[in-house]
Amino acid sequence: MSGIRSTGFLHLGNYFGAIRNYVRMQEEYDCYFMVADLHTLTTHPDTTELKTNVHRVLAEYIACGLDPEKSALYCQSHLRETAELYLYLNMLAYTGELEKTTTFKDKVRQHPDNVNAGLLTYPVLMAADILLQRARFVPVGKDQEQHLEMARNFAKRFNHRYGKDGEVFPEPQAFNFGEQLVKVPSLDDSGKMSKSENQNAAIFLSDSDDQIRNKLKKAKTDSGPTEPDTPMPGYIENIFQLLRLVSAPDVVEKFEGDYKSANIRYGDLKKQLGEDMVSFIRPIREKAEAIRNDEAYLRRIMEMGAEKARRNAGITMEKVRAAMGLQYY
Ligand code: ADP
Image 1: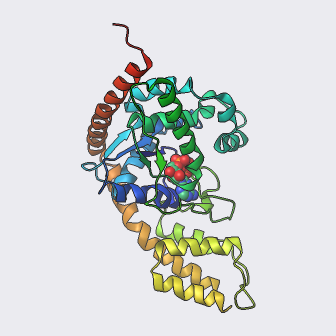
Image 2: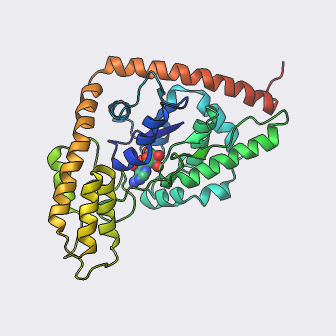
Image 3: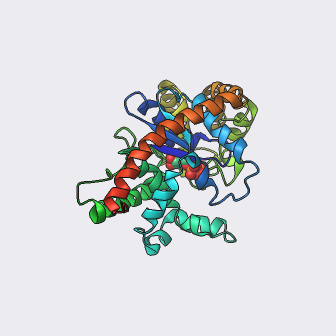
């Protein structure tokens, strides 16, 4: 189970941190992938663009290879059970632990005029999404590690307090096929690539060929190493990281060799990366554009996904209410 907020176009971080694994997982597991529209409201209270953005994420999911016949693709707010479980879990979450969450502290810094309680309880809502489907594996990027730890704590706390007749929730694990979780860097070397901050430091799955080329052309470099085996500065390492994601192994090897022997030409490196990135993104962009305009199809997908997710959520909530003793007749 996993999801992405409907706050705009998806970027390479969303793809390599999350969606790539969704696509792989749907072949082996029973999967639930949603558009997290309720989480969006914690930072984007204006709902004018919400419908367009929900459609956008769904279209990009499908364009990246998610198959609505294999996975349940749904919208978070279509499962009213989420709100109920969120309420119960809030009683098990301590304000102290929520206030210490890194993402909460970051968001307070970014939106000092809108520090709402939903922002504080963001990890509780996320735990509700995951536990509602009794999910074991959650494909996410590295930035979500702490939230997953919290979801595990809430599951353990619930099981401990109410699970007298056996465990209600499995403990969910962040998942990347046994590999380290991924963090795609931003192009301006300011941390992780993200939707919300500098738009020029992120490459979006909707970017035109020229936008991609231009953004990569502007990525920070320097005059290059003057001696062989010079350690790589972070911003150059970031470019190589992107190269490893989209370019062929022999291309990566060539530029790594050039760097090592202090013969690298960053102009060539960025040009090659630009072309490989364009070849990677173009088919996704074109497919997503076509799907986004087919509202009837998107509606069918959302209804089908919600029905499947709701069925499973219903089973969970029966167990939850019974375990908590919320049955009076
Ligand atoms: P954003 O941070 O861009 O608003 P979300 O919070 O909706 O995106 O994250 C959706 C998914 O994409 C999560 O699984 C998150 O870990 C992953 N993700 C987002 N940015 C990155 C990144 N730069 N590197 C790796 N994974 C990322």
